[in-house]
Amino acid sequence: MEVVNLEVPHGSGGVGGRRRASGARPPAKVAIGTFDGVHLGHRQVLHECDTVLTFDPHPMYVLEPRRVPSLLSDRRHKLHKLGALGVRRVAIVPFDRAWSRVPAEEFVERVLIDRLGAEFVSVGEGFRFGARGSGTTATFDRYPGLTTRVVPLVTRGPAGEPISSTRIRRLILDGEVELAAELLGGCLTLPAIVGDEGRLLISSRFARPGPGFYFGYVDGRYCGIRVRQDHTVAFLGTTRTGTPVDVTFVKRAR
Image 1: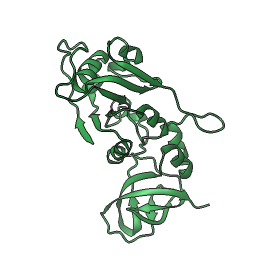
Image 2: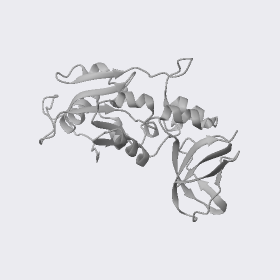
Image 3: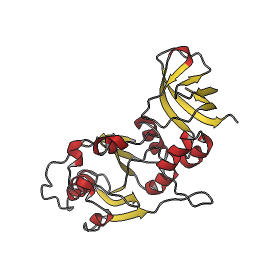
Image 4: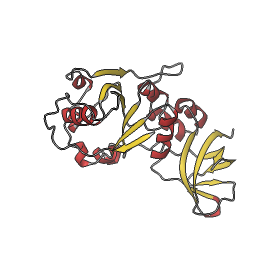
């Protein structure tokens, strides 16, 4: 899978949606979104798309840092999931103040059409983009040859509750990692560093399960994992201190 970091476009240069990406690459079907966790709702947006345009860091870190949500995955795990779904190319917007000022029309012309060669765009319901969120799905309609698919919220459960990153974070905080896994399409896996005395150092940037005892994997080895009231995490293992590991929460002990 090809992964590219995009540069901020500087001026529309008269592209106007007419010039396509150079080379022999065929026209692209592009899914756009943050795709934190790559959950089942996201996968409807990703369906049949060969290219993903995503944002890292999460735009909220720049736009509203006090409201930044806890993350369901890091970049490495997100890319792994996208590749497993058959995505061939991921274009990453390293979102910062400069990117936040790019007008919606310039984003379509210089990034989607000129840089990625998009002829088909897939987004979730309510998607907005561009400076001050001025771009909507209607913006795409102004460009001949650019087809847009807007995917409505995917629901699951007797109450018809939407599958969303917010819902999954709530389940994780409540310790319902098995229910969260059903919506994620796989068990919650977070990066960590092994600390002293069997501790696992998981950044507060990530959605960590609520206090309790869990069964799961630490770097591929099945073991018990305890999350304490102060959110410190410990495991029953002998991995050397300072080792980076993946922590997978499978189920909570009842």
